[in-house]
Structure formats: C-alpha cells, structure tokens
Length: 257
Picture 1 (spheres, rainbow, N blue to C red):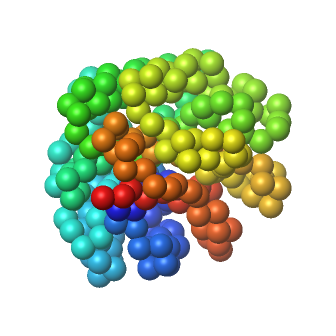
Picture 2 (cartoon, rainbow, N blue to C red):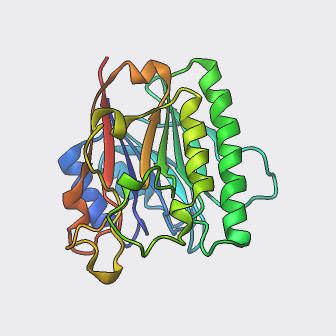
Picture 3 (cartoon, rainbow, N blue to C red):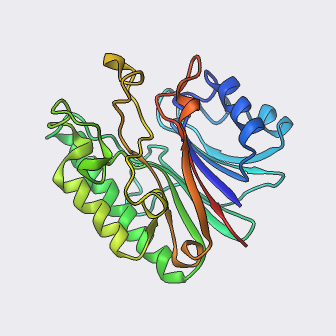
C-alpha cells in the first residue's frame, strides 16, 4: 500500500501536474492540502476518470483538504479537528481506506510571530496532539499525513539565518511535534532516512529550488501497527521541478501486507 501526501497549492491550477503524477506513481491513497477551492470547485469528476474516489472539505481561496483512494471510495469519518466548534478553517479530514484510518491535515503556518496567527498555530496543534492521542490509544492502523508547517529539527532546513524569526522553526512548535512523536507515532521519513537530509518544500522566492534551499514540512506519522509494516518512504523531488509546480513535492510511504 502506497500512501502519499501533497500540498498541491491550488488543486485546479495544478490539476495537470497532479494527474501526471497519479498516472506515473500510482499511489493507493493521496492526502491533499491547500486545495484553494470550494466544495463545488473540487475536480471530483476528473479524479474519478483517473480512477480515484475522493472525500474533501473545501474553502474558498484558502486551505482545503482531501483524501483520494485508487479504485475505491474513502469512507469519511471526520471533516474537522475536534476541540473548537468555532474554528471554520478547512484543515483536517479523516477517512477509512482499505482498513487504514487516514488523516489529511494542513496545519496553520503561524506567521507572523509573535501574534494571533502564531497563537492559533499553537492552539490548533494542541488540538491535533489531543486527537492523535485518542487515535493512537485505539490501536487501529492510522496515518497522520500532511503539511504540519513545522520543521522538526535544525537538520530539516538548509543552512540559513533567514528563517530565524519564522514560525516554522520556533521552539514551541518543535516541542509540540516532539510531544506528538512521544505518543508512539513513527515519523516514516526519518525512520527510513535516519541520517539523510530530506526536504519536501522549496519556496518560490530567492531561487530556492535551484539552490536546493529546502525545508522538511510534510510528514507521515504511522501508528504502531503501521510502523511494523513500513517498507520504504521518499520524496518525489522531480514533481517540484515541473512547470507550474507547487512549492511542495509529493512525499510517500509504502507499507507491506
């Protein structure tokens, strides 16, 4: 089973890129973030023609998350992160696919910090930690996949001082990510590439893609049952180099039976 996550940065604008990658990589499950489309604008028909069933939660101009399943219809279980009924941002969706519970999440960026956006980032991640703890305690096979907007460690960002004040690298969200892992989740990329520099995001500004000035923001966390099935993981860097590409690359894991 191949499960991927992709911050697509506008699904309709980058639909040709997505279709090419789906045809080439043939993932079984895809978690999408930053759809930048309403529910009605989501290209469900085009994806169905490509062989993928989908569930999604859209939002006009911003955010938006989806889960795609090859040759199947995901069974929707949740369309929001619990803990704040007043939070209307489309940042979390959850569905069952082939016996695995899949979560696609798009965490808040948090910039500028300090300020309200950073506070929201921390509050949202606390809600994620609480819900993740409940999911882990069930013992079910679960994947928490998406753009966490957290650079876990200094080695997950290129050598620079330009991000020192950025919300992505602050001690508080890094500590939250570490607390999440302490629940027992396995960071699939770090597990299979323990000593390598791995990036999943390259900003459009300052020639960062050609310079390989990247960050690791996209993570797939596996519950205990799935961690035992982990075979490999990686980043399809060539996706970032295509014409009209998202600023993120597709990131994936393969699981054995």
